[in-house]
Image 1 (spheres, rainbow, N blue to C red):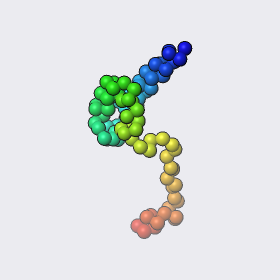
Image 2: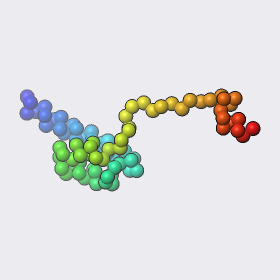
Image 3: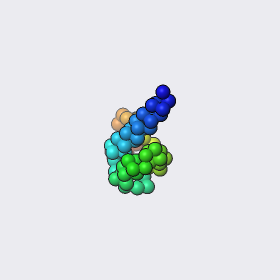
Image 4: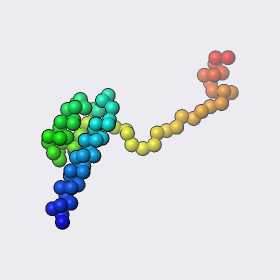
Length: 83
């Protein structure tokens, strides 16, 4: 049973990493061009996806984004400075 589960998990991880790399914006991929990471993920097997997650994936993509607080005009220093 373990002989079947482990290869399936590795193939799934590789496919997930390939899709993640393909959908990431070219300007956010680190250390190599996007096409280079895609080739590494496909050609190197298990080490390629791990290398992408360690060295190529953009940092700071997870987690909630801080919301910008909207100030009313009478509390906004930029608005008051323009008066």
